[in-house]
Every structure is written in C-alpha cells, then in structure tokens.
Length: 171
Image (cartoon, rainbow, N blue to C red):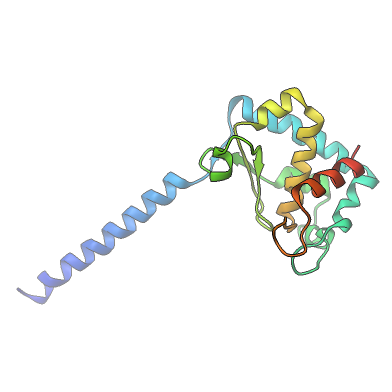
C-alpha cells in the first residue's frame, strides 16, 4: 500500500470526527424561546427591569460578591450598562435540554459569571400564577450571571437566602 493510501483513512477518520463534533454541538446548541415561554419571560423581565430601577433594589449589586470577592456592581460596570440595560442583554434560552430543568422543580437555571439563563417548563406557570415571584426569579438568576455563586459553594448564600434578599430589596 502506498503512503497516500495509508493517509487517506486517517484523514477520513479526522473528517468524520470533526463532522460528528459539529453535528453534536449544533444539536446541543441552546434554542431561543418561543410562544408562551417567550411571552412569560418578557413579562417577568419587564417587571424585573422596573424593580431594578429602584435604588433599594440596585443595592443587591453591592450586597453580594463573586467567588473572587468582587461586588456584582463591579462586574456589571465592566459591561458599561445599567442594571436594567444588562437584564435586557442577557439571553433567556430554552432549558428543556438542561438536567436541572428535567426534575420539574426548577424554573430558571444560570451559572455564575455566564451571561445566559435557561428557562425550564415550569417558569411560565410561575409567571401566570405568581408574577411577582417570577420577577424575583429573573433578578435572582441575573445575579448569578454577574458572578454570584450559590451554596454549596464555599461562602456563597443559599438559593433561599438570595431570593429572600431580592424580595426584601425589590418590593
């Protein structure tokens, strides 16, 4: 067999691996929200923006810090956006492929410092039945996108503590 003949299977294998990876990545790519889920998020986001326009509510950004000890306000300053503008910049995506969404108990999912929020199937029901709670949930997740961790991360508040602070500051 010639050198050329021996190289071809290797190139084919590499090409196949690249194609498979690209296909897998596109299949797992987050999807935009549609229909009722999109409307529910926009309604809650609008309410969250109104709350974040209040001085007391914006204090959340100095109440909490990220894992490096920076205030969330400092992290927001890097975006050169107001809290309300930042909320509008964060994409809310279909979370049906996310493991926490599949348990039926989670409504929104965000990771510290990652500018996106996944929306689970239960969120629209919260928005319909408890719009104020849905707005607080949006703010809670926005804090995560700015770097706020959550217990069991060392030194991080629990989910309940975050939500209680949001409710206290953002009435």
